[in-house]
Every structure is written in C-alpha cells, then in structure tokens.
Image (cartoon, rainbow, N blue to C red; front, top):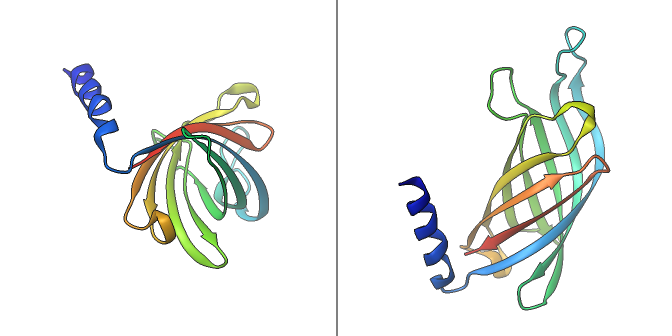
Length: 151
C-alpha cells in the first residue's frame, strides 16, 4: 500500500501548475559555533553550528540560479532518529526568499557523508507562496549535492 501511495504522489506531481525539478550543489563556510565538548569519550558534542551556504541550482529547462543563506544546525539529542537538524534562511539583498528546514541521518564511521532531507517554504520574490522538497548528501569536504522539486 505504501508503494502505491508513493507512486500516486510521484505520478500526480508533474500536474502541479508551477512545479520545477532541479539539481543543486551547495558549498558551506563555517561561522564560529556555539558548542560544548563531548561529556565523555565517544559522546557527541552538544550545541549549534552556524554556517553560510551558497547553493547553485540547475533547473530541468537548463536555467541556473545561485542563492545564499545563513544556517544553523543542531546535533540531535541521544535517542533521536536523526543526527542533526537545522534551518537555513536564503536571502537576496537582505530580503528573505525562502527557508529550508532539514534533517540529516546520524554520521557513519570513518567520516563518511550523510544523507539529508529538507522542506522548502517560499517567502519572497518568485518563491513566495511555493513549497518544495529536496534530498541531498552532505560530503566530508563541506559540500552537498542533491535534487528537489519546487511546487
């Protein structure tokens, strides 16, 4: 039943009036974090990490757009199904364009990248009133790559 629901959603998605599929690459620059060291050996740190992001989107029609954000992520508490969660505010000349709320899996051993998912909410400009979803992988080199859809 779950597969049937997913198939129905994906089949109906192209019918959305302004749906746009895209791929993207994001590059991060860390801003000094507010973090506590791990309480014991092998424990996770606690606190928030702040970072700036530059995202280059390529839409299905070949159009490209770069947006910039300030983000904050938080290490999830022990027992959480996610490793981190956070938010980003994408702006242009100080005006809010859209927000992103993301959740990432717990990091694997050996510093491997992690998979994430996010919801997008359009706030201004051509994004106002739109919503979207993305999936991406955070890489150990401080970048992420993924795909998504604006509705």
